Every structure is written in structure tokens, then in C-alpha cells.
Image 1 (cartoon, rainbow, N blue to C red):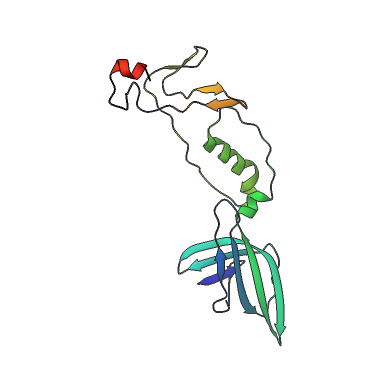
Image 2 (image 1 turned 30 degrees about the vertical axis):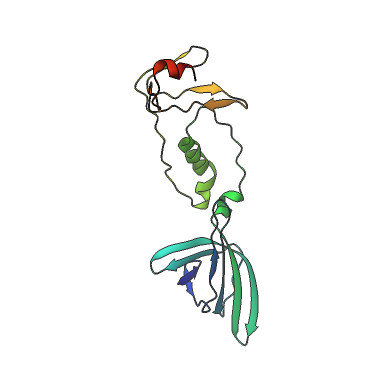
Length: 176
């Protein structure tokens, strides 16, 4: 394993690296380095396993212990969730695809942090017209948005139109 702080390779103390990887929350990385330099909170950290980046984030806290001219740093890092966690984004979107919303957030807020991205744009396909509850026609390949309990809601449609999923006769099916 190799660790870089602000793109500079550091001397990692053997067996000091611990990465606590979490889904939908910040992952934490702890390690110790021996150096004559000082580090600051917020500096960029990258951890590689051979050529594969396995952790990226920023220094969250540092404890220093001096031994002669050498400093042993116990470093705790927070992952790149920090870039979005520190920002507030208040914008209302109506009838807008999720990929479009993510692109807008990146453009408006996260690009300044060096975040780049090209989220996949979801597609919707239906080879026939459909109708809203009030009878309004919805064009081919256009999703249906209905008023939901808390505002707008997307109607999820099955790709199987007119299919009977069980071995019932039409009469038996209508009695269910």
C-alpha cells in the first residue's frame, strides 16, 4: 500500500493503515506516517494498492508525537463525501430526470471542488400512447407524472402490457 498526502508519497508505518469503508456515509481512513514535515487538516489523501486507488479523501484530524527530529503523525481522514456534505443546495426540480438534476448540482456547486461527472441519463420507452387518471393522453415514449400524496409522482409501468401472469381463464381473472 502507498499513501500520498497532497500528491507526495509518505512513509507509512507498517500495519498502521485501516480503512473503514461505508456505504451511503463517510468512509474513514486511519494511518501513521513518519516524517520531518507537518500536515494540516483538509489536505488531500490518496491510498493506492499497486496502481489502484482504493481511498481518496482529506485529513480530518492529526496527532503528532515528536521523537528527536522525527515526527510520528497519527492521521484520520474523511472520504470525498466531505465535498458534498459541506455544501447546501436548495433547488426545486419538477418533472426532471435524476441525471439532469445530478449534472446541475455538479455544475452549480461541486465543479468548484474539482468534482466532475457525467451521470447516465435514464431512458423511458413505451411504444403506445398512455393516459393519465384524468384522461389526458400521454405521448409514445413519454413518462406519466401524476399528483401523488406529497406532490408529483412517477407512474412505473410494466414492460408487459396486457399479460396475464397466472394460469387463469378470463372469467377467473375477473373474479379475483
